[in-house]
Image (cartoon, rainbow, N blue to C red; front, side):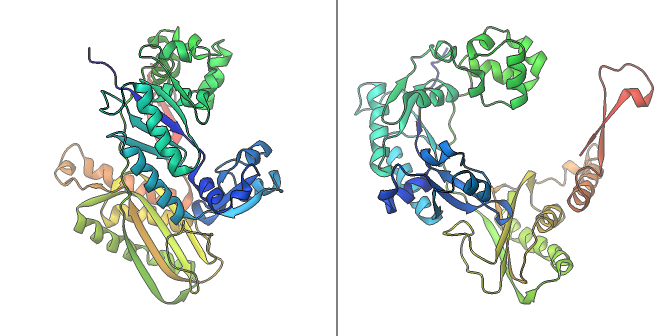
Length: 414
């Protein structure tokens, strides 16, 4: 059996917070919250210092809640341009020490340590060199964990603390994780609560249960639970790539305050974006809609302070879409979630997470897929306009052998 790959997890303060501390070193050790726009343009907490987090301000929290939880904190808007530059510098520094780097978010990175490095005799020296390179860019040493699985490496980094390395020897992942609480597992809260009710409060207790029993009790989460607690979760890395998008921009002939007029123009937006995607032979996995008032500033919606007169929303699509018929329902849904307080002068629609466009016309000839496509699109339009509770799905109950439909069938929303 081939040896499992080895990887290092590096954890550090959020890059938005590091940018603030670079610009204002006098705030080191003070409560600091960084503000940025969330979905729909609502301000949220992008990053919080340790002092602010201790007072109750956490990333992703609504801005008003954070201000109430920590009124003494310094409130700073996110500088997305500086964050992007710092991220690129950090990736370049890590890339000099490892051929494969994954940037999961702006607080965590993984690097591949498999094989040997010509300049570092040991695995620990290799990981330490990467940590020093990242510290030179960030101005603060990261916490480093080394293991043969992603989850174990991340827990090791948390246990190490800033400026230190925690190395888990190959094959020692299960023993290292055994005393950890099940609360550290990246699983739904309902699964964690049931584990505690079953008398399984630690990872070691869960690892002693056969995988088949866990899978019967928790379904797919049970199999993942067994992999995590035994240190056998996948260790492959996804290399970082700059996100590439495809978008259109329309300047309206006079600001429009009529909401139905904006919805009426959604079909034209879908046609234009479909043409741009077709020219690139790509399909969109995510859409972002930006509305700007007459005097609103241009530029990315995440740059600098949250601009006045700008409203935006974003949606991850259940499958890649490319045609105007497929694009129209999510565009209408994005429009329905925005309520500008001023007339709209500019509309921007951006397609992200682009994927190669696959021909689907032949597939529609088999197994009534064309009918299914029409039904799916009709349901999506109904959901966007009237909510997900309007249309219900029917499924067979495998545990109900009766022939009566009311006992044989199960209904659920969506």
